Length: 209
Image 1: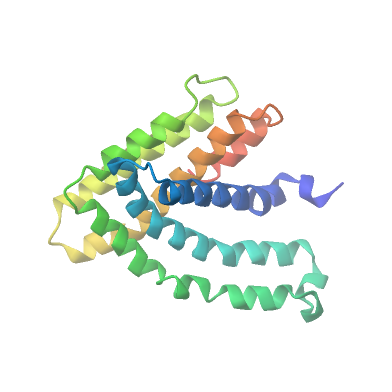
Image 2 (image 1 turned 180 degrees about the horizontal axis):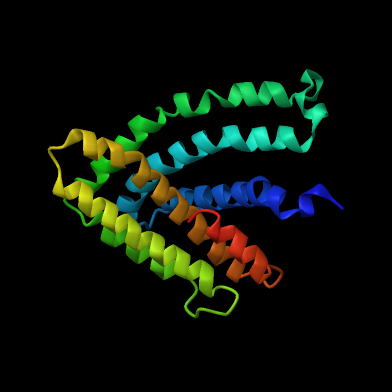
């Protein structure tokens, strides 16, 4: 049986890259669209550090998964995979380090705009309008994740002078946004494709949330 057909391999090795690409494409749309609204400009400001953080952080375990898929051959230098794994370690550092980018995300929420409200509105607008049987669970997972994110932000807002508490929440908030953004994009894309099964939809979205 082909290794790529196995769920344990497909989940991190296939779903994650697709979700990240979709997240990048939608972020690029927000940046390149000359007709972007004020709300979309705020979303771009929020998503920019999130996408940098998440893609930089996740490329390391993904390349490690690729090495594992090749077995012993993947460990051999001649394949180039070990070099790629070593080189990937620089991405979380080069992009600003995970902690710095997470704190930048918090700075966005500290502004005057209702950033959480705009983010929630955007996510809900891109979810399938009807909860089809095969999409009901993934859609519910996205909505629950949005609610959980709101709860975390509320806790952080109640202790603005407690830097330890706020900083501790920073990563959780940033990664939560990344998973919602990626999971929503993947679910919406899957819903538009007649070739994607409910099983794949489940994996594509639940993986993040």
